[in-house]
Length: 162
Image 1 (spheres, rainbow, N blue to C red):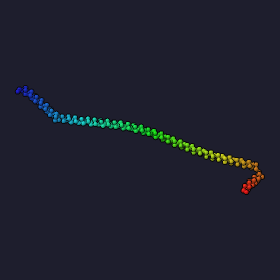
Image 2 (image 1 turned 90 degrees about the vertical axis):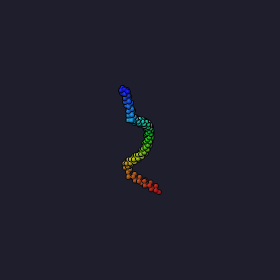
Image 3 (image 1 turned 60 degrees about the horizontal axis):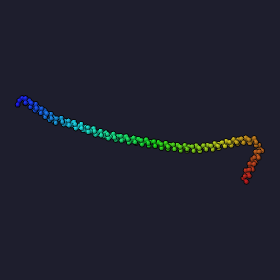
Image 4 (image 1 turned 135 degrees about the vertical axis):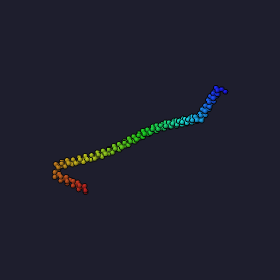
């Protein structure tokens, strides 16, 4: 063999040894690292997809909850409006009843005040008439007329007792 053939074969064998060493190093140290890295990234992706699906479900639940809250809010507003109308009607009815009772009481009080005023006016007129009559009686009645009136009164009283 010639040196040239030996150099060529040594180059081929060196290349083969180099390729075998690279394949062995790849299989022993690099491939497991790449596979572990790939497995961890696949796990991260799977976890991210799982979280995404959970978040989608949570978003759907939240939207449903918002719709229920909107419905509840509308119901509460409607009930509040109905309650306010009922309360307003009840308050108006009570106020009308109180007003009618106050008017009746005031009419009764007015009637009593009129009767009392009428009685006071009669008494006042009677007192003034008596004062005037006394004044006129003093000028018109003398002792003789007074004695005659007293006798008639006594006779009338005495005649009534019999």
